Every structure is written in C-alpha cells, then in structure tokens.
Amino acid sequence: MPGSEREFERIKAKFSEFEAKIRKIDERIKEMKKKVEELRKQAHLYGYVELRPVKNKTGTVYHYYYYVYYVKEGKVWKKKSVYLGNTLDEKFLEELERGKRIRALEREIRKLEKEKRKLIKKISKVINELSGGTYV
Image (cartoon, rainbow, N blue to C red):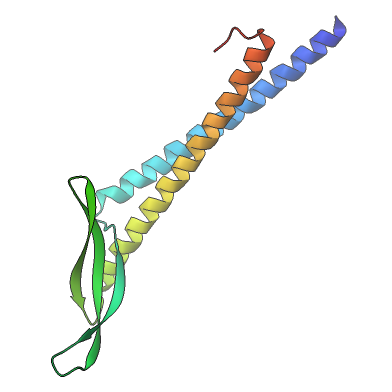
C-alpha cells in the first residue's frame, strides 16, 4: 500500500494547487470588479469618436467630429451620432477613455471566470474518475 499513499499525496497536492489557483482567480476578479464599480461611479461614455467629411452648399469639404454610440430600441441596436464640432473637449476624451477601461476590465473578468470554470471542471472530472463515476 505504500504506492497508494504516495498516489494519494500526489493527488492531494494537485488539488491544493488547483484550490490555490482558484483562490487567486477569485481575488483578482474581486479586485477588478471593485475597480469597475469605482469607474462606474464616475460618468463615462460607451461609444467612439470619428472624423467625418461634411460638404456645405458650395461643395467645400470640412471635417467635423461626431460621437457615435448604439442604442437598443426594442430588440434592435440602432447607431446614433451626435455632432461635436471641429475640436474635441479634453473632458469628453477622458470620459471615452474611462468607458474603454471599464470594457477592458469586464473582458478580463469574463476571461478569468472562464478559466475558473475550466479548473473546476478539471477537478470534478478527477473526482469523478476516482469515485468510479458516481460524482456529478
């Protein structure tokens, strides 16, 4: 039976390794959600700025900035745009950056949660094999 004790210790070490990884992921998710909440307390915009050429009556082309965003109307997302002028306000750009940071953090949170689900699936698979297929 010494072989089975070594095997048991190896499995136990592997489980504690998985547990530590899951704990790290949970802590990181918690930190990131806290950052997202802090950023959401401040005003932010979800959209982007584009420079569009606009012709006047005589045919002269001017370039103006437009803020483009999407609005959900019923089941359909509609593209809307707002005229900003020929210069951009620094505060407006900061708000756009804040929105981008929030979306990047949310993407990272989703990626970490997916990794956590994979680890839990691996653990349940190992438990299922060890118990002879009775664990779900």
